[in-house]
Amino acid sequence: MHRLVIFGITGRMGQSLLRALAADDGLRLSAAVASAASPSLGKDAVLQGSPCGIPVTADAAAALADADVAVDFSLPQAVAAHAAACAAASVPLLVGSTGLDLATHEALCAAARRIPVLIAPNTSVGVSVMERLVTTAARALGADFDTEILEAHHRMKRDAPSGTAIALGEAIAAARGATLAELAVFDRHGDIGVRRPQSIGFSVVRGGDIVGEHTVIFAADGERIEITHRAGDRMIFARGALRAAAALVGRSAGLLRMHDILGV
Image (tube, rainbow, N blue to C red; front, side, top):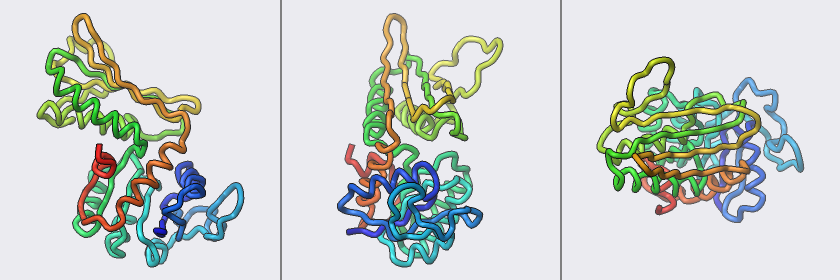
């Protein structure tokens, strides 16, 4: 059984991972990490429910000393330091945190030269399949189809568009031989003129307790294709993250995405 470290243990995903671990035969929790400012330091990692006997710590190096793999769902500003600690300890890392800046991406690339690093803005198996479907559609449909990405999340989500929406946009742009920076339209207001050919528009909803919804629309004259994924339970992300984390153990160093692990 592989030993797992969870960064961001006190967050929604951290606690969902703990619940998913209870039904997982291949992984067990070896350490739980939160920020140095967390009021949960020293307390049991399970904040509600039956204790697991693992105390919350802020010492990443000590947490990784007896680990086979780590998952990170902490705040984005903490990810670079966690990646460096994992690289130093030779522990593979899955990063599920979103809203990462350029410096953090560079830190993850540096870590990936020493360990396998999986960047997974969405750990749902269904979303990984959706990314492949929109890639296929973008290649097949061509320039006659306009593309829009709609996403909706709960009121507490801080980054917009979501990491999943960005990943979908990147997949579509790559299928068209371009970068997302060249094609993305993130803001529309006032007299914006006619639509720019090949552009990828984004729309964002934040409200209530929406777990996560993503729709990619390919629209042409007289027809429209919509590919949608709706998450009704946060546990789908936890189960997908554990499946992917277990698959990282024993892999060679490098930068990976969910579809690399799932073989989609």
